[in-house]
Amino acid sequence: MPLSATLVHQLRAFEAVGRHGSFKRAADELSVTQSALSHQVRHLEQHLGVALLLRLHRRIEMTEEGRRLCADCTAGFQTLERAVRQLTHTDAESTLTVGVAPYFSARWLTPRLGRWWARHPNIDLQLRHAYQPADFLHDKVDAGISWGHGNWDQAEVKRVLTGELVAVCSPALPSLGAIAKDIGTLTRQRLMCEFDRRHWELWFRNAGHVVTRKLDVVVFDDSHALRRAALEGHGVALFFRGLVQEDLASGQLVQILDVSVDPGSAYYFVRPKGKPVGPKLAAFQRWLMDEVRRAPFA
Image (cartoon, rainbow, N blue to C red; front, side):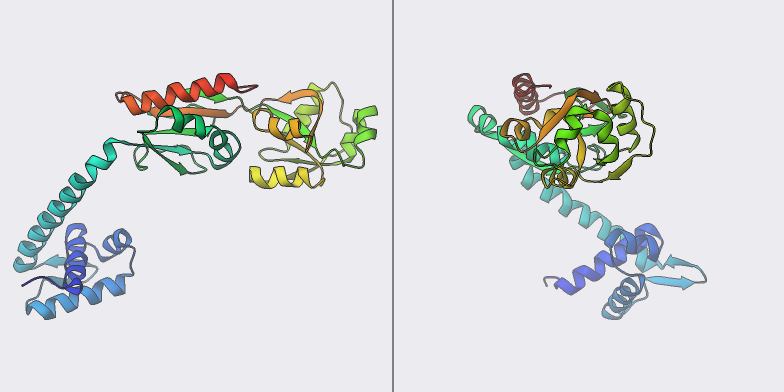
C-alpha cells in the first residue's frame, strides 16, 4: 500500500527527532515548531499502534520499535536523496553557478553577459546574488565575485576591480561651482558614503585640504541607494571609480578632483582552494579577465 503524504511527513518528523535525540534540534532542522513536531510523532504512534518514544524528564529515548523504525527511515530517506542527486547530476554537468555581489552584477557584469553567451552558448551560467562573500562550504556555487578584503580562508582569489572611491555628484548640485573654486566649500556640504565616514576625512587629506570643521556625513548601506542619492542631487558621494564610469560618461554625475580613497577592499573572483578547475570554470575565468582588461580602472 502506498504511503500517504501525511504519513510520509510524520515519518520524516519522527526520523529527525530520533536522529537528533531532541525535539528542539529536529524542529530547527525542519523549520517547524516543537509543538507541531510532537503532534506529528503522536499521530504516527497512534496510526501504528505502538510507542516509538519514551518522553522522560528533559530528555527522550526511543523504544525498541522506535529504534528499528528510525534506522529504516534514515536509510530510506538517504536512498531517496541519492536518487534525486543522480537525476539532477546530468543537468549539473552543463551548469556553472557563480555567486556575485548584486551591485557589481547590475552595473558591471550584466551589461557584458552578451559577449559571454556569444562565446559560450553551451554553458548554462547561473548567477546567485548575495551581499556576503561566496561560502563554498554551504552555498551551491562553483565560484564567486565578491566584495571584501580578499583574505578568505579556503578560497583562491584574483582581483577583478579595485575598490578606489572617488567624489561624485549631480551636475545640477547648486554648490558645484563654488566647490570648483574652493575645495573648502565641500566641507560645508552634505557628504555621503557607503562604508566608513572616515573615508571622507582621508579624501580631504589626499586632496591636500585640512579639515577644520565637523563633516556632515550620511552613511548608506546599499550602493544602489547611494548612487540614487547622488543622482538626485542630495549631496556629494564617495563611490566606486570602476563602477561609476558610465554615469560620468553620460554626464549624469561629475567627479570632483582627480582624488581617490582606497578603502582596503575590492571586488575579487574567488574559487575553492585546492579544487581542480573544470573546463566551464576555466572558460568563465578567462572571459572575466578578458572583460577586466577591456574595462577602465580595472
